Image: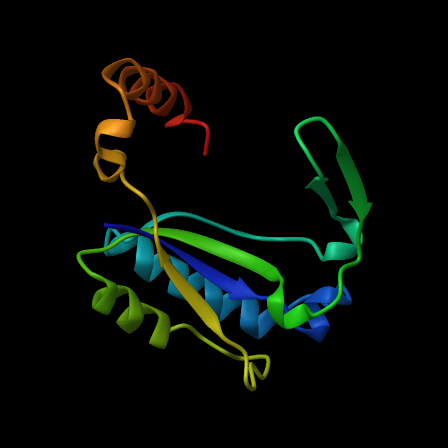
Length: 143
């Protein structure tokens, strides 16, 4: 199963405070463990929401662009991983091993299963399924 591991933002990440050298070194070691174990498919840190935009869909035609920063850092995403794991329990065990060198006091990491094509059932027609498979083939090397 694939899961997205979502790292929530905090005051430092929203204020563009970069992780310490120690934190970066320890996170790189952790990422290397994930890669060697065949778990990590992708992973990235995100700039703060002061550099972000949101697009709100007000109806079928109206789109409103909202400039960051956004409030409530605990509800914002600072980074993510995409992992291939055997179970949610395995994902939890890997997250528990995540280094927290810069004082992750009270912070949370969310783990969410990624929908697999077969989970959409009959609503995903054979034609749409074939188009989705072709898009995956094309984008598989994009990361």
